[in-house]
Length: 290
Image 1: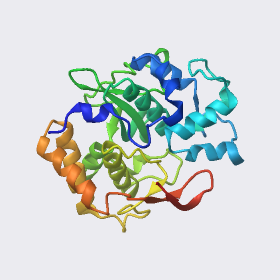
Image 2 (image 1 turned 120 degrees about the horizontal axis):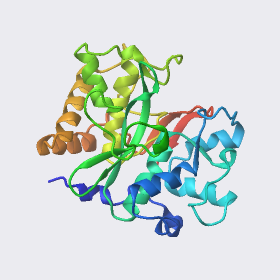
Image 3 (image 1 turned 90 degrees about the vertical axis):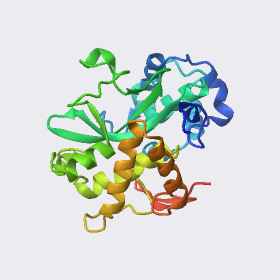
Image 4 (image 1 turned 60 degrees about the horizontal axis):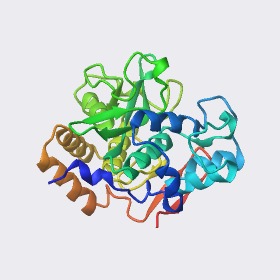
């Protein structure tokens, strides 16, 4: 049986390695951890700062240990002192979620990153997004570490799930698209960005599965059945995985076991030892994950 405790241990991506003492110093409280993370990470395009070169390349750090190594080259060995905005780790929502999950797991609090879409960044548009999810002892709770509570009308560390929810998983978006309940062209990177639509949402279902199986890969990593066109999308495969993800979220243990088995055995779903990274940094290459 899958239990929340599976997510109380580090993955290869959340493992802080030699920087474990930095996470020892952090509190075992999601709100305080989120506040620390907001002081560590700056979004590579969200603040209007034109990051280039080595700074923009920080978006490809991928591993918590590498993220912390980059931070520690610039700042003293404490994490809870906010860094000047332009000197923070250049990353995105995935990195904020990863560091939050890493800190919680370090204190043996079950946590995982969730891949989906947020309705709160653009009116009438669902923007691709990654948040943290943690087990509070009774249920799984959504938390967006990028959001300052003072700026939002909902609880940012116990986000509502009732419809219309601020954040919905990729599987929810895909299922709504396939049943004709949403316009999938209103789901993607942004209202004025070409990366949107069915192929984009389908890829995110596969990314959601990877993160659920503790492979917290970058949003610009590609592998297996992922595609860049609607014609290349394996609709049956995405339908199956989305349905299993929704069932697992509703407590279906058989669905959870099937996801685990499929991810371990199907090369269309599991990246194995390498991914094709097509990054906003300009990197376009195969990356060895070992």
